[in-house]
Length: 60
Image (cartoon, rainbow, N blue to C red; front, side, top):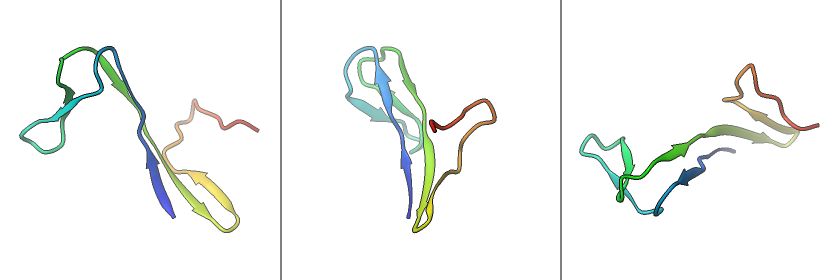
């Protein structure tokens, strides 16, 4: 199984609007926001974070 976790932190409301390009998402109130994501694969023997950057580490 593969899934993505995509938290979004907004200074204002969580209401969003998708732009005409079908990809860009902005908050409706146009306040600052930040988004990050990781893609994770889970198998019968464990998991792997496919998008882990070199400067990141997983908890033991």
